[in-house]
Length: 232
Image 1 (spheres, rainbow, N blue to C red):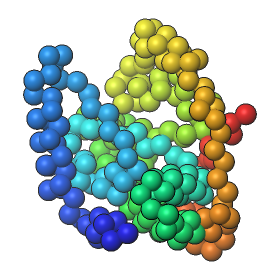
Image 2: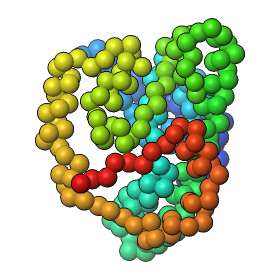
Image 3: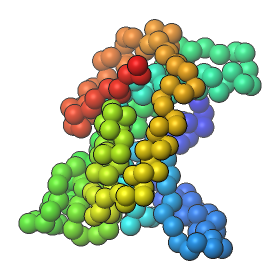
């Protein structure tokens, strides 16, 4: 918790860390026999440092994946609980749930603030351009943001990825990529390793901060957020 408080206290001071992050990636790829390739990096905590990412990685392509916060917090709380179970028996799921609700709320608050700022800045700078809302400037640089819903990715993964590629790179998936993706999806159904259905009440997430959060409500409205698709 103290480490997370430290991270969240750095609201406007991520650029130094991201510059070091970029140097590490450059070091890792310097002897790549295949030459420069796209890095694919994934963590929800990038949402707390979007301005820093845009500054340090001006050619970045961001996929902002949306899911109802109630489900996101529950899922993360369950993962954290299982991870802590490897090293300790002193686990309080309700405390974990409360902490994850606070962290998600702060991350989304910052993401909303920056996406709104990008939208206004791009619109003011590129009047008459093809700016399409919420900071997705399509004309002035190679920086791009594509919004996608987890439900769409689950229900139509190939179609959703093809749309994302078109938004970010101006071209869809190749025939070979579609074939390989369909093969992987066939061999890896969502229930391949069984089902895990944590309950909100086990983590104290069925009332209070989670349900009443103005940040979560704003986020749902701003991005027309949907819940994840259920597993049959």
